[in-house]
Amino acid sequence: MANKVAKAARRYVGLGWPLYPVKGGQKRPAWIAGAYEHGYLDAKPDTAVFEASRYNIGLALGAARLVVLDIDVRNGGSRAAVQRRFGREVLTTARQRTGGGGWHFFYRADPDTEVRHRLLEGLTGCELLGAGYGVVLTPSLHESGNLYQWVHGAAPWQGEILPLPRTMLNASVPPVSDGVKTEVKAKLGGDIKQPELTEGDDLLHNLRAAIGTAVEGARNTKLYLAAQEVGRQVTAGRVDQEVAYAALHQIGLELGLKPNEVPHTVRSGLKSRAAGRGISRIVTLAEYRAEQALRHQPE
Image (cartoon, rainbow, N blue to C red; front, side, top):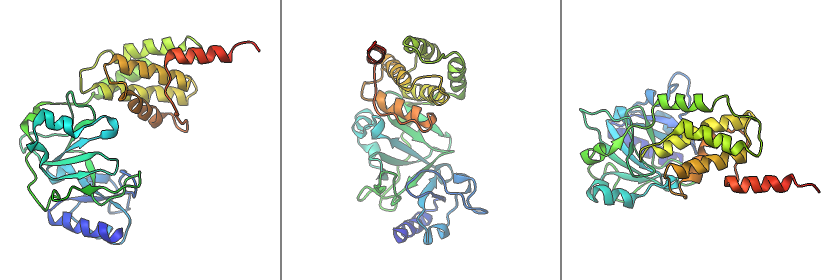
């Protein structure tokens, strides 16, 4: 595996791509004293670190002047949906399958328009990544145990990397701002009581106030951020985990997300903050109340 990684790194450096080491089986940058201490900011067209190691290969997109269309199939992303929206031609650029089953499509950045992170409106699980971001490259190892792989005949040294389609850029929107993060945190921060049978409605009310409405393309992000903040309350013991899950699920549906999209977003957000608390299933508020009523029945 190390030999394959080193060979691939040499090919990328031949393209002038700035690389940085990523922890094996992860997406987190590796820390190497004096050489790679700041992730993608330390990326360089150098292969030395990959020659005799088991690191994954990271690519600094901004320094490479590239933008990647990331299609996350586990979060509802669909290559077919992108093709229907923008046409087949935009998907003929260099592309790889991610270890998680998704897709990365590589485009040349527009020199007059900086793209950092943008969501494709109306296309769940599809986002543009550019300056300030990095991606993991073939043949890196994903946490699933699968490898990233260039599509046959579509590696960057085998064909053209297309310019970022203007139609795609025009159809993208920035993610929820830090201001919205602060708003969500403030409105969920201190008003949640110890778990009671009525807590589901209290939390639901707070979530509605914090999230409000969201335009298509930003709904998943808003739900995820809210799940993170609720996850902190779960970790602190102020909210019951099942109540949190049920309330967030209801909010996701109210935002207009598809039922099969909501569980993954809620689970991911809660897990990222509810340290050490596994989330095994999703319940509705009605199911939660029914279960609690059974538990509290006199014997």
